[in-house]
Length: 325
Image (tube, rainbow, N blue to C red; front, side, top):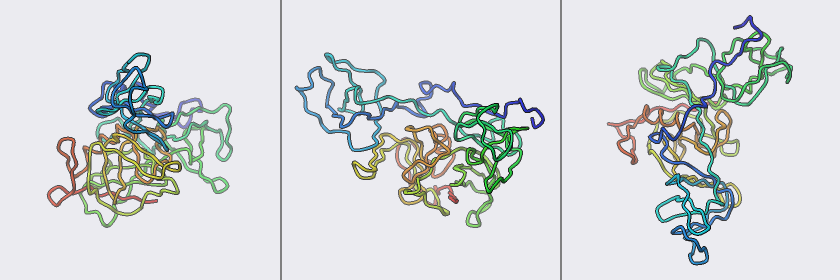
């Protein structure tokens, strides 16, 4: 691979064949963004809007709703989405958007290439030499493709990664997977999670064995994810999330999947509203792709029975979570 300048550096492409309609056990809903606000919510789909009063309005910020049915209901000349029991919204207020199909690496099941690995997190083009960003004659790399890292070189105080002969990329465009050292506060032989806020990479460990790795989106600078050693204190499969001040940083998200709370109200959870994993984006929680959230929810403790809430206790303790820069 290192001797052929024309060889592709991509080890694993984006999973474009994954079909969410076949995996409703992982994510049971479709989701839509409230694109036009205020959006009135009605108690029933009607043909004459003037004959009914809204039960509430969706407005003031970043708002997503889950769709209880894929079907669009027609009443007169009006078309409706069914969002909650007794709640319907005209389709013109909502934009149904696809959910990320990104998935991390399962080191026990996937065929994992040897060597240092990382995911491209921003679309980029390789350069022939480190330190010079070129956009001609290089290999185009989509975000979220997996690459092997052959060498790291500093040029003018900036790190560059060699992916193949005459193929270099700026290190800030790649999230590198590293094997973490177990913190002193975690006993040997137990499951634990390492979250590297610099690389935006989460690694699941069983003792000193690397089990799973994926990209995250942690908190933006004004909503920094707390660093430290924690334990998951509670889990729930699905719940609404909201916060901020209307007109400023308000958000409301229905049916957010796979919450794993590790510190106060901070959680690792699935995010259906973006596909920017590997880039900081959240209000403080640790966003991961829904497929990764489903896997991690089943792997971590406390164990959850059914669809409800489970709190950690001595007989069902929580998994350790180490968050660091």
